[in-house]
Length: 282
Image 1 (spheres, rainbow, N blue to C red):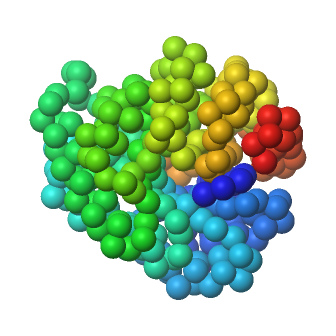
Image 2: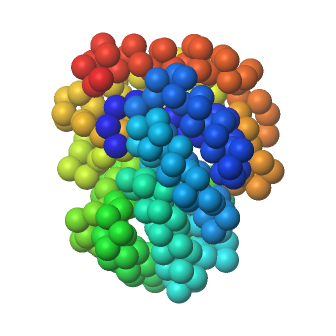
């Protein structure tokens, strides 16, 4: 998980053979260092096919997901463990390096009340079991802090660190996202500094999830702080322009946030890369 990557939602959210071929070919075209594959339906993924494509192009991969409601870790820990173990196995079979994202809960999971100790204890138990399984498969796990409107459990870098340390496994890391940080952190720098000891991965996403460089994210503050802590992890551009209804609902993406792939990849990607070079991150 080094260098510059892209979330494959740029081209597809359905990781079938056709989606894999399209996204991997496009990632190679744009010279990405790695890709992030959304595992919305892990059991259906043709892992051997994806692995062959990745190896052909010498392209590393990271997988990500949010737990479906039937497997929310806070209330259905056994189902969550089963779901994560299947996803971990598929991640390993594809030859990917890590499984990250909202692995502790669902995108759209809210009770209307503050989190409880029981919810957090269930999550810690799930992640402890999942980390042990992932360790056997040579996979790392990432906890992505997301905003309060998508999940009520882990919203800040400090909360993600707290859960990582509560679990205590050496193969779990913190995953930040500039879109969520723009909502939740008291300054992007503070979120990065809070997570610095466990931070290995960051989504570079604009304040409206559209084309980076056209919104309100404080990019110079973000990049300067990453440089200051000596960040060596994955920098993954994430912009949503291909959303199936179930994902749009969880993310509350109701209108186009960017014109098309050409706008995001032609303008947003160079903007983020140039900033990364300016601050010595790539």
